[in-house]
Amino acid sequence: MIKTDALIIGAGPTGLFTAHQLKLIGLDCEIVDNLDKIGGQCIELYPDKPIYDIPAVPECTGEELTNNLINQLKPFDIKFHLNERVDEVKRDDDNWFVKTNSGKTFLTPNVIIAGGVGSFEPRKFPPKECEKFENKSLFYSVKDKKKFEGKTISIFGGGDSALDWAVELSKTSKVNLVHRRDEFRGAQATVDKIKELKNAGKIQLFTKYQLVDVKGSSQLENIDIKHDDGEIKNLKTDYVLGFFGLIMQLGPIADWGLNIDKKTIKVDTEKFETNQKGIYAVGDICTYPGKLKLILSGFHEGALAARACFKLARPNEKYRFEFTTTSSKLLKRLGKKE
Image 1: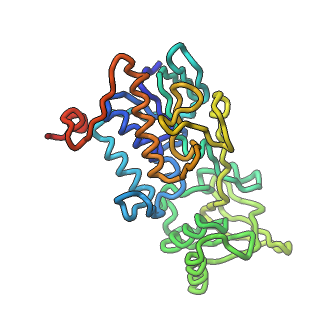
Image 2: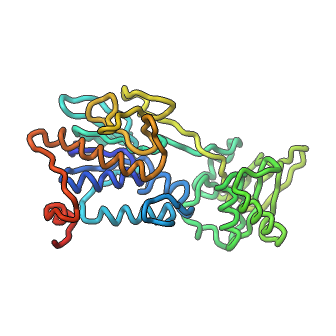
Image 3: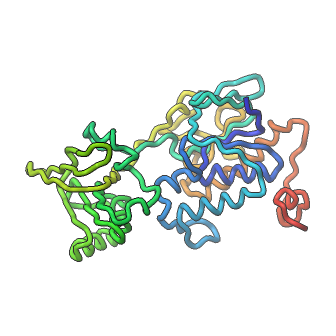
């Protein structure tokens, strides 16, 4: 069993900055995330898309923001438990007993839920045959675009993700863009770019078509798409990408006795504590009057929750607020010289 001052559920931007704040005030913490990498939605959904509303950062991608937050944590020794989903949280005297899906257990006075939108998984293609190609030659997100260089890619979807990746991958690959409607839901500038690439012969566009069959042995070789009028086309393809949005679910969090409001967790605005003492919720997963789903709001929430954790983790000590610009103690923790 792992004992720690605070356990953070979620390794997205809010979870990472909350860890920074905990370590800065002298508390230990560990981070659990059900994804296989650090960064949460920023890395899983929009690693290459620019973000424009981070204070003092005019523009950065999800990947750049994540890397900067990881660099900010370098002075501290923080243990990450990736590919781990927290399934059980129950009271154990003055602590919380936490158990993951792999059987890993934690004992802590503080649990900070920074789980973004909770558990999320992509909406998938209907044909059952698609399952055997998943994570081999059929994907619902792009983790490494170099994998597709010089290949034929069939992209399905009509929103921003499908259009953005069609534009990006057309630079180094042959791209088929397939959508079940005539109209696209993405930004108009991107839609215009798609039409420009189609006219230039760099993208093949198929509208009013849907995937009906996938063929191949261990790897995809070709697919069948069906038009609304019943016509079926066969496309040779090396990879298939599907972008149909996500199914958002709280998952096991819904069973922890917390006050839930429309798949978000109600908190106070003093400590961002839930109705359960010692359990906090920060970032997109929490709600309160006036809540804004901005990354900067999550940073604020995490900073206050971290300081609330001090009282439960160090009941015999008094927390004293200090500035990093003037506190020799904080500078020492950061590995800086006065």
